[in-house]
Amino acid sequence: MTKYLLALSSLLIICCTPKKETLPKLKQAVSIHFDEAMKPFYHGVASGDPLPDRVIIWTRVTPEDSVSSVPVKWEVAEDESFSSIYQTDTTSASAGRDYTVKVDVDALKPDRVYYYRFTALGKTSIVGRTKTAPVTTKDSLKFAIASCANWEFGYFSAYDKIADRPVLDAVLHLGDYIYEYGVGRYGDTTLGRINIPPYEIVSLQDYRTRYSLYRLDKGLRRVHQQHPFITIWDDHEIANNSTVTGAQNHQPEDGDYEKRKAAAKQTYYEWMPIRESKELYRSFSFGSLADVIMLDERLAGRDPEITDINNPSLKSDERSMLGAAQLQWFENALKSSKATWKVIGNQVIFSDVFIQDIYPKMQRNLDSWDGFPSEKKKLVDFIRANKIQDIVITSGDTHASWAFEAAVDITKNYQPFAVELGVTSISSGNLDERKSADTVKIMEQALLKRNPHIKYNNHRDHGYLLLTLYPNQTKAEWFFVETLKTPESKEFLAKRFIVTKGSSRLKEQ
Image (cartoon, rainbow, N blue to C red; front, side, top):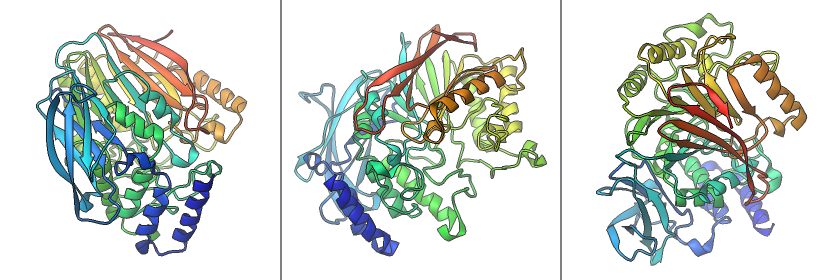
């Protein structure tokens, strides 16, 4: 409790200090969460964007004093004891990159587990474990799917449970890796997990500090240490309901949106173990068994949100979620894929969802693909016209778990074109933070009755989705944690579905 009182004291000082003068105090507030045994690598290590011959490895060095750069040595080995170093070299952690280090290690072997570590300022980091993608046919692939982690709502214990799993091919993170809000705006501050900075983040310094805070959570630090990540942003990495030109949670007093967006993007690329390019959308091959296609449904081409379902512009052919360039890229990726399974990293729900009479204030969720009906129909028509099968859409954003037989124009005899699997939040608030569990269960049953293509939904629990791909079927398993109130929690399997190759129907097991 003492450390939280110290943190609150630091934050009270920050709140009364002009933002341009807060950097030393922000560092002091974040340092309350440091594990001194990990100095100067308090944020651990991470890896990501695995290819058959290369993978990104990442760390951050935290020097005691402000310096322009710190020399860093990195090592990669095929065994955890580093008895035989496979590759090693030196680089630097610079102030211009917030002292983050990112190395694209090449000349690796496909479908192989590697271990890596860093050395700086006379200290060695914890050892990370990663894995390259396969080239040949595999008996199975296993991915964990995660989304929506909010510091103030609770501990990231679901990440901790993913970390406990044997080697995964990757963790697919579908966005809302951080949240931009100030203290108490969206969360449960009684836990002592207080946002730093305490105000809404808008500047480069703000975003860097918020990522620094999140990456000190034990569960998040451990899951990055144990598995490679493939990530995409959603809106809260920038601001709520963000688009190319603005965001619902960006007001004139927040300054220039383009500067805020640039700061958010720069920080994301600094702190995430991904390859940097002009566009974030990208794809990965995991041999003949799967292609993973990650979409950017926020900053690549999304038009401003329409909030009125009766607005005639809603159905305009000109409105776009992806933008013309990404839409063309996505269609080419689907059509050219030779893999058995096409796994789509999709931020917001794609399938039609009718929620009127269940959510009286909202007839449809127009921040999802329901807000872009023309482009959604174009994609479905393209998939059907080209007879593309075995598409598995994975979706985040809603803080709820879903199993869809993905379809549009829902009727009693609907014909699904894919399956869509929605993952709940790691910790962000779901319905039972605002309503009783019994009320939420009644709402869940009403959704199932109104939407025959929805085979499962859960708006109460937090956790992750485990996706296992086989040559003849895909298995989806929803795992939930028992509590967010403590750093560690037990987990339980809540639901399991199977989809058979050549079919878009879900079978519960």
